[in-house]
Image 1: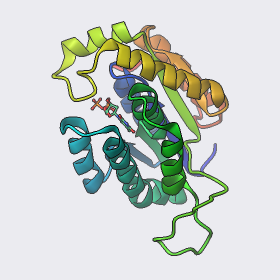
Image 2: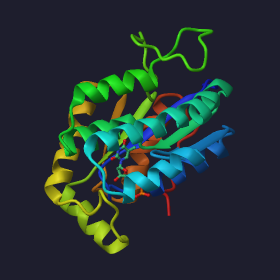
Image 3: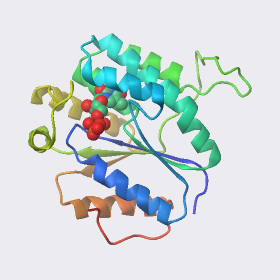
Length: 232
Ligand code: TYD
């Protein structure tokens, strides 16, 4: 089994049903002896969690929103994700940069070239030995997840699930048309990078979703055994 660091992100529109599966996968990786970091974006560090509060609850324009999610990502990458991957841990991250392209880009209609510029600054791999403050202006490689699991559900189904679940934040309160654009944004990214993405039909039973997820991890050599059970 692979013992090098493993970076897996989980994406989908609000209400797509990521959370229970992330928890169950985390338990499974631990059971199989992997050291695990379970984290989320925006968030995952004290600073990034403070930025999350602002992004989810304060009114702001699209550029401010994009700058804040990337600022949170920079802190998270540097202080949590990169050190964990260097140790050989498994990092399960609830959302990463695909969310920015889907929500701020496709959803809000914010300029994708600017998002790509921010992505290069934040996720560009600096030259070995470069000072901590160095930003790779023209990086040859970007830090991206090894695998991105995209949970896809029709926006109307997701909205119905959310309405039952909790009080809406700034994004959850947006109309279905917004989530149609976000879903399309995710689908376009998945189509552009089929090797990195696995698309899961989140409108099946929990057990069917779980079977697909564990099979994906097993086929890549990341889990030693397939497990029949499904999450609670
Ligand atoms: P979410 O991940 O759904 O957490 P919870 O299950 O606790 O509600 O909420 C995060 C929200 O932030 C979600 O609506 C998507 C949004 N978001 C962005 O708009 N851009 C980003 O880059 C990220 C990471 C999240």
